[in-house]
Image (cartoon, rainbow, N blue to C red; front, side):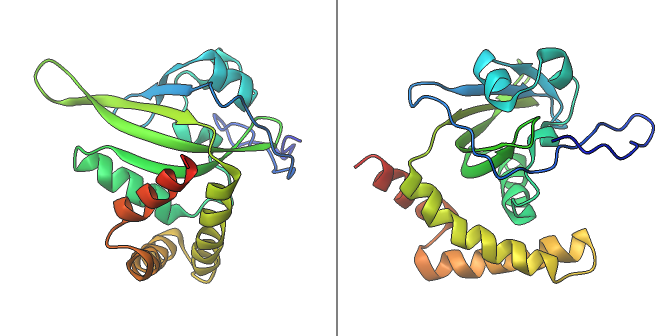
Amino acid sequence: MLDTRPAARGARSVPRPTGVERTFAADELIVSKTDPRGVITYANDVFLRVSGYDLDQVLGQPHNLIRHPDMPRAVFKLLWDTLAARQEVFAYIDNLAADGGHYWVLAHVTPSYGADGAVVGYHSNRRRPARSAVERVRPLYQRLLAEERRHPNARAAVEASSRLLGELIAEQAQSYDDWIWSIINDEEH
């Protein structure tokens, strides 16, 4: 269901989450590319089908077009900080479709480089995660989101939930990468 409140000039309608989960085949990959600011420059047919958007609705839009409001901001801060360090990142993400449905992915995001070695954008491949992986990350994400909601503004929320993310990961693994790979490796068994 689309939000029918009047949009600010140039703003887009934001779908309201319905709680209906979408999925896609285990052998399909959702692929998108962005410029360095995260603006979509390419989306494959699987991206379009699963997200429920047409190509002309996503090209030129920020990739957070599909950001589900129940995704903690700390996860996206970690993603962008990792990419800024010119490293790849893996993350479990719950995305929001155009109709308010949602779909979980295991995202692998990498910087794309130009001939001069400068970052010219980002490339993301997403596959369908195992249900067991989603069940492992969901409680952590719920805790992070609850922490974010305790704070009066986005900056304070991200700082607090990022600290909490670091603490919670340290309880389970040596690093975020170790934690995420332990989940990915469990998926494959």
